[in-house]
View 1 (cartoon, rainbow, N blue to C red):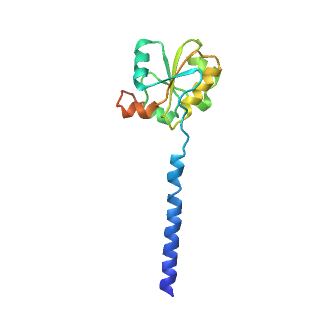
View 2: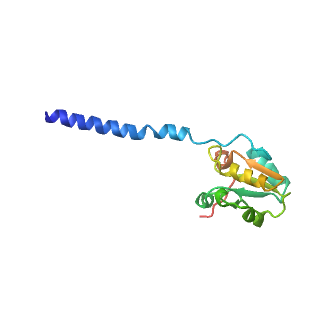
View 3: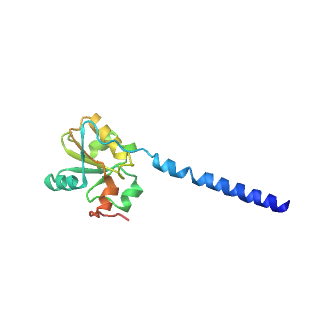
Length: 150
């Protein structure tokens, strides 16, 4: 009888552990994906981002990620402005002219921070809004240069 109780407890413990582990995979797969494009903004690739920065020295690059992520690495010259705290006034501090070229990026296609920021900027009347959809993941996957503040 003791053997049966031990076996039952062991099996039930394993089943509980499996149930706790298995739901994690579908949750990660169901993480929202950023849209393919945004009305009023132009979606660009890593290569187009580099071309834009080289062709237009006045372009403003906004990193919409959390400060801790930004400090670990970001595109050189990027300004850290978290999407959730970005207001018209805070964006105007860096980009007072609505015709200035602005590029927003975050962690990549599974991150919606920069798409949110693009939507805000367009709604506030900014005219030349670019969205680097591939973001930090694509940038580092392609081994493009970046700097850290750590």
